Amino acid sequence: MADLASADIRQIMDLLPHRYPFLLLDKVVDIDGGKSGTGIKNVTINEPFFQGHFPQNPVMPGVLIIEAMAQTAGVIVMLAEGAEAQPKLVYFMSIEKAKFRTPVLPGDTLHLHLTLARKRGPVGKFQAEARVDGKLVSEAEITAMIVDK
Image 1 (cartoon, helix red, strand yellow):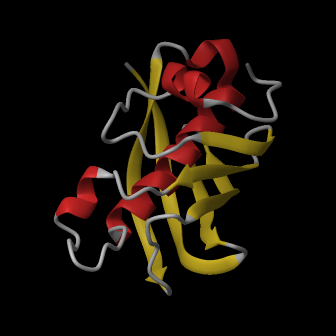
Image 2 (cartoon, rainbow, N blue to C red; image 1 turned 180 degrees about the vertical axis):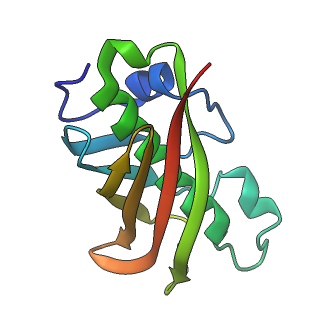
């Protein structure tokens, strides 16, 4: 799988342990080895979090945007590791410089652009940007670590 330039939902589910309602990716595209990739999340009114956040004014929680960024990083890392990664997991370690600029609403398509900034052993730090219709809605630096299951 290390040569894939994209991953559909079935491949994502093979790589990550997350499942509904916590799997927050539909696809990952533009994967460049372990260096970068773009996660895609189609945000719909049927998302369970909209029942309480907020019923009369639905807004995707910022923490879930960050989680979608982390899941995108997980897919990029696992694909880069290839077959050796199968008995491994990617753990989200830290978040820095998170900013939320514009609400993400039902009907939006969230594009999560991640670029590897630094890698030291099993730990990688990513620059992450979330965009809707090309407009920056959120950004952060996230750190993840690959570990044995």
